[in-house]
Length: 449
Image 1 (tube, one colour):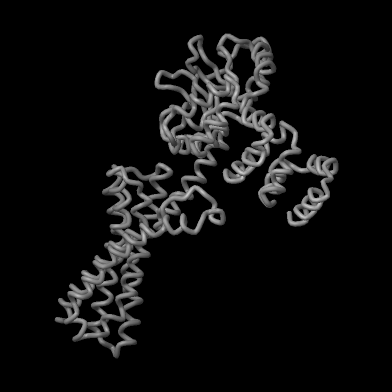
Image 2 (tube, rainbow, N blue to C red):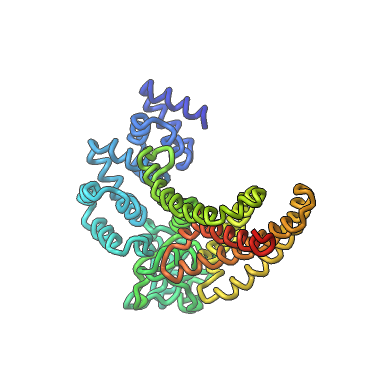
């Protein structure tokens, strides 16, 4: 990729437009998109300007959102090219692009759309944010049940040029209610005189336009489909969602969850293109919350100062207990959050989760406790009572951490809070406080401090 970049930069600097066009013809769309992403803005815009209308549309859809905005700004003076590009974009891709632009920019671009494309865009933007309606495209091929295979193929040839996909054809009644969907392979292999009704099985899966887009992710995973129809509550076919749109959703949702689990406010911009102040703003709120919550830990330690003065060696084991507990809780929460995201764990499973985490915690606690007992016993002049204190504390800490880690995400879901917020940092803080209370309580009981 480095050599290609140098080569194309040289052609751009030499203004060798004919050679540049010829070289671009030898590259795939994704390769040209990668090349544009790697160039400075001015050179990227120059390269984009010489693309054909069809290539420009395809390559634009491969670019990152920031790069798309740079291109739009760069060709703003060429009204014809900008108008063609905005009108040529697939409706779902155009909607996703518009919804992330400042309002005034979206409105200006909206005026460049044809009456038909503007109507489609306004309709899609009218669905709730993060709904399936925002993902769908109205560009599909639909036929009637009484069409013969021959008629269907003629219909596809006539209306299929602008369809998002021809892998699946949709069957609707006279009121545009979906009856079935059928793969193109089944149509091609059927006899020309057979009707669509004869080769369909009236079994299909549809999405509701108002459902959250994460529902689409789950349905695609469960059904292994290339595209799925989108309907209103009455079953009327409104559009389709394709698997590439769902993959984009999965990437965004996964990124957002990772950021939340790392105690970051979600950011929608690439790391290297995000300003320092924005990065700091996304982090400082959670850091402040965690800093203040950590004062609870300090208060607990302060309340046992007298005991620690009698047996200072107890202090040495606090980091180990807190660290092990935090890690144990994070393990459980990560698995439960993942399970809820993919539909394996539900709120109703709360007691099953608690019981399982208690048993897992017991096994882990016993294993780590036995190892720890020997280590503490040897390193502390064969002090059996101290070893027993630390070992029991470790066992109880792991048991509680596993239970809390499995329970908090489910509680969050019940309260309609994003479970990712209840992830590692918050759970670690909760477990830290709990482990200290357990540790000092056991030390008081066994050592009499």
